[in-house]
Length: 401
Ligand code: PLP
Image 1 (tube, helix red, strand yellow):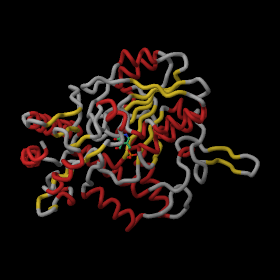
Image 2 (cartoon, rainbow, N blue to C red; image 1 turned 30 degrees about the vertical axis):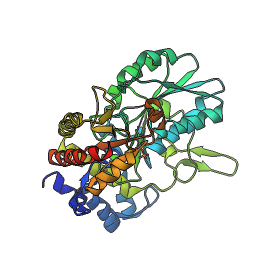
Image 3 (cartoon, protein in one colour; image 1 turned 90 degrees about the horizontal axis):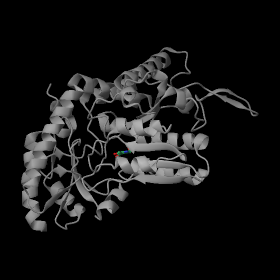
Image 4 (tube, rainbow, N blue to C red; image 1 turned 135 degrees about the vertical axis):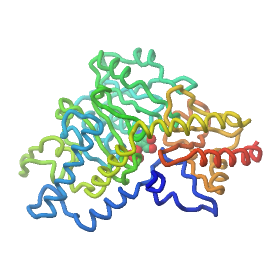
């Protein structure tokens, strides 16, 4: 079966036009194998894990733990217990901001994030800083959308406790130099959290090669179901953090006087997890491996280069985020038109894009714009769809100028 045929949702019309789904940075569609896995789980395997002596519970537990090992291999973590299942990137970052903040942030300390973060990698740190009396500092970026590493070096000082940056910006598409950032931070003894929400589906991620201390991502942006995500934490650091949530599974012994906590990774997985979605994540990783991550990256680069070239030919259209090293995200504006108007007109032609601030209001403030229109590609998109998109833009742009 062709890659595209594995995604049944794409085979539909919108307002009588074939659906062109270019909103992949928000969430990717799911291949049949992931859908079948969910169906199989609820048809044949559903059971609460870890606590049951019966057949179904044992099988579900094995499949759940097997996925943990699959994720470990997928991102080349040293140990399976460095993989914590969460609901998504947002929860992974909140977990670290909360637990790390409680353990390591004190009045007068500083946390560094970049100015191109998603709100998910800003607000949890703001909350942690407010609770602990610490200060949030930001790494600026250039007009092209490139982080200023000199400014970053200047921000680091003896008060810095952690650096949190995205691997890829969801608005600008910039691929950030994580190895350089990690090396600089580590030379000051400062750990680094990487928000991998926008990188995990586009490139090989090797957490040991990156050298980062935490890496966070969401299943739903990498062909897996919604509601499942991952926190990778380097054992030596993760093991020093206090629990994030209390409840079942994360404990060793509970009395009313005193509770002792479970070992990694269970200490951070309170309550019943979304087992079916975890198995769906396994199927999504299988899909990506079978397709080939290099194949995915090459195809998306071709679509991005092709679309960028065609868009640059359209007068009145301005691309926001022009770093040389980008993933398949193209943010743009048409004259002074509001992004929402462009998105609505494209929608009427069957083309799904995202409009607005993309949960990155500081980026919009940096450029002095209200938002952008964002087209983002995945492995199942085609050059023909890009042609349809360009033809639509050529119709729309004169109407808005
Ligand atoms: N970080 C980045 C860079 C993102 O693009 C997103 C989602 O768009 C998130 C974090 C939050 O991901 P989720 O909503 O899946 O938790």
